[in-house]
Image 1: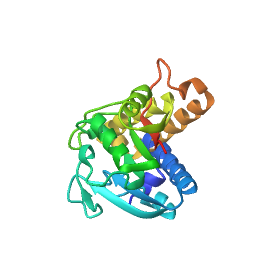
Image 2: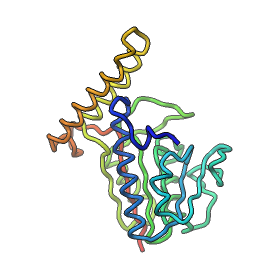
Image 3: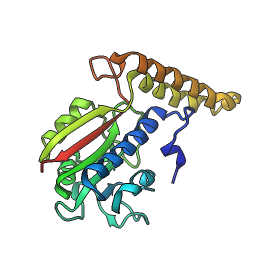
Image 4: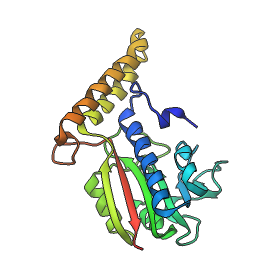
Length: 233
């Protein structure tokens, strides 16, 4: 498990995605426990389960699913055809997967199918991000687009979409990614961490100070989005 996923340093180029995502998942894991009691969790596209420790205090069972022969996954399949019974999970986690999915609408319908009435899906995916095929990279989203995707696919009682970080932080991330790539190939590579850290710190402070940079409105961008979709009880 990567500690950098749970407590990313400001020197990480993708801090604008990683830090808000870890905070959000920690809060939502605890909120689900308070609302639902000890719950059964499905982690779709689980990988190494980097956020498992955030959920462990609140779950009674964790089931991992992946597309490859992953020793952490007890289910193997794709999001468009989840090998699980209807309404078999209280909470479904799908972190940084949707941008790689062939058919996002079918994927959302499947997330709804395996979530019990009154349960919820926690999903995160990219807004503005560099191309990163793993093995494919197919989609980028807006908050409005994600809201429509969920509301038109599945029986949801509520859907809430929020930007993980503001415009300044998102721009800082994109610049930091390329700056880090350039500096690592030069004698200045030893200073790339402090420079990226300074860039992220300044952008974070600006987003906190200017509310217009945090809201989705014409002219803004978001590096990542967080979705809480609750099944109708």
